[in-house]
Image 1: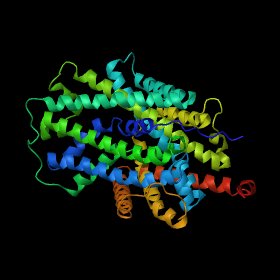
Image 2: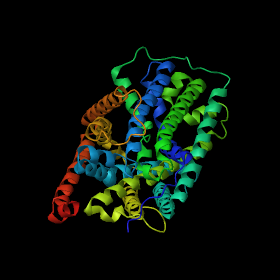
Image 3: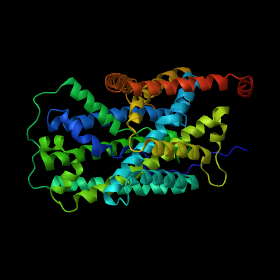
Length: 442
């Protein structure tokens, strides 16, 4: 008997998943570089607002798809229905093979790096910290959906409070210098890099779609969670950048190596370093837990449809979780942690693959309206088709920018990404074209 996911996620739980995944450590790492590419403080705040609006166009597209097809797997489901089983398979393969485990490992390393500044008992303890984070959070999510969502809710509330504390400190400084020296003009290269980093920092707004089958009152709460989560993060990002600028000024912000520490140090110099380390540790753990929770649902959906991954498509009757999908995902993430050590920059070069799948999913709004016009759509994209076109154009721009960067800076990373997709296509060909596999689909 097939065990189906239960609807256990409230609107608050769903919003916490989105906010918890988006707000990792990216805002603390990318803010100075983004600012350096913009002409002064209006440009800095403007590009974070633009990033939020672009993320919102994508969230609205996903809201239509997720409410029309409220199943586990998100993009996997939409791509399969739009273009065929092969498209969903390649998405699931790329997520399972490297993108999702790589993202989990990346955030685990961020946690480990900052945890090491608080307590480092021996050399290379960061690897142990990262491994423990992956194992502990994977185990919590195996034990039950309630355990996973409560952990996510707690970490999201704590990291939001941490950001609000930084905003309060930064805006309370008595010597604001927001309008200090700034570059003479905006360059295309600077704008392009800034937008890439902003949208990378907003990454995760689409994660709600992967757990759609577990959301209570999905017709209402999926849309609300996507919009509320994206808008809340946009507001927090604009405010925290305003706090950085207010406390440090444009010139100091762009030259800062630890912008949050420097901001807090303007008011509380004695505790700045340790306080920010704790906040970033909590932020990174929240992102890891959210990625573990939602990522396993992609593998589960893939296992339900494809015989080669059948074991992943089993929902545990007693625990109420996709145990095998979580175990395999955790093992792959742990392998990256142990093998890569602290050098996992190659993971970021999967960005071209990520954006091409975003483009395919955005386009599926058009495709599915044409192919399945009778399907009930509790929510339809606001200002259609303009909103969807803007999102798709953004995806094309980001894909082009990421490929251009990879070809100049790290062509090997691009080859790795293409190699992963090609190997997935080979596995699909050999497993799905066997007579036994074809007969089971009939």
